[in-house]
Image 1 (cartoon, rainbow, N blue to C red):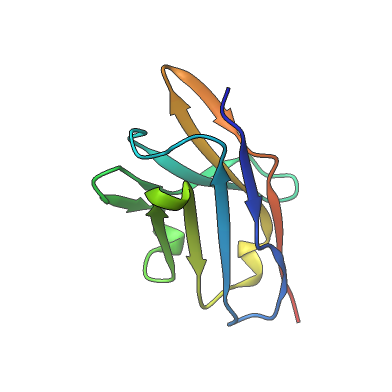
Image 2: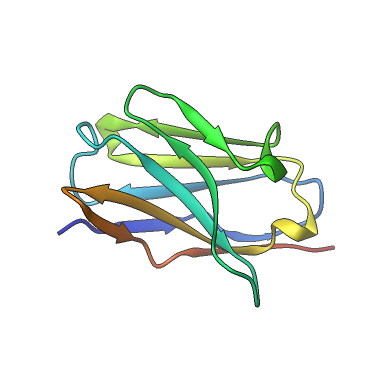
Amino acid sequence: QVQLVESGGGLVQPGGSLTLSCAASVSIFGINAMAWYRQGLGQQRELVATITNRGSTNYTDSVKGRFAISRHNAKNTVYLEMNSLKPEDTAVYYCKTIVYGMEYWGKGTLVIVSS
């Protein structure tokens, strides 16, 4: 059983920054892909960013150049640094991983971008 706990969400003004954290209950050293998803109100959940255990990253087009995903294996934590935030980034952000073919999700952290 893998537990993922997100934190770091909150209210931020447009143009501001936030860094989200995803703490895993197990070592992530051997876990290949870790990912951040988000779901806005009335919208489908979408993939935001992924990172492999070799540090390769991918981003959805709407966040390229503004968001950065990283991982600290020794801390069993994945981060999502979000800059130049826009109102359309408002969503619940979820952390996800797959271990031995099983999907694990956190409960999410809410990010609101508003003036």
